[in-house]
Image (cartoon, rainbow, N blue to C red; front, top):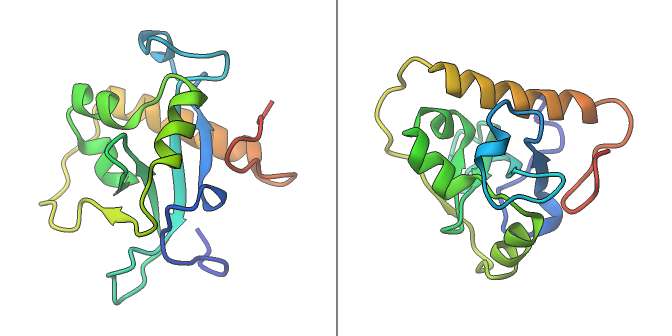
Length: 147
């Protein structure tokens, strides 16, 4: 991850990417979901309060709070699915339209990391597959179809 074009995390939908998890082996467990779903919303940048300005990938949840992707993988599966995995793009659009102008960041005080479970590795692989697919040519932003 290069930090050439990074900025502080924002709640602007134009800075976020809608990531399809339809290739995730457990995608059919998310109901309801649309043709491209389920989804996570990803943004790369800095925590505005991080004085070291370490580039990080974040996901946003239904609560409107951003969480570093590494912490997302460490959450209990039911909590992760309930808060951060959206079944439809319409859910994401509604959540993003209701956000305040200033982003809220979770995970600043989260204690040490634990080993990834097989489910963590599967969802990580689905996110990485989407990112790999979008490298090189155009990089679909929020709301653009990546197919």
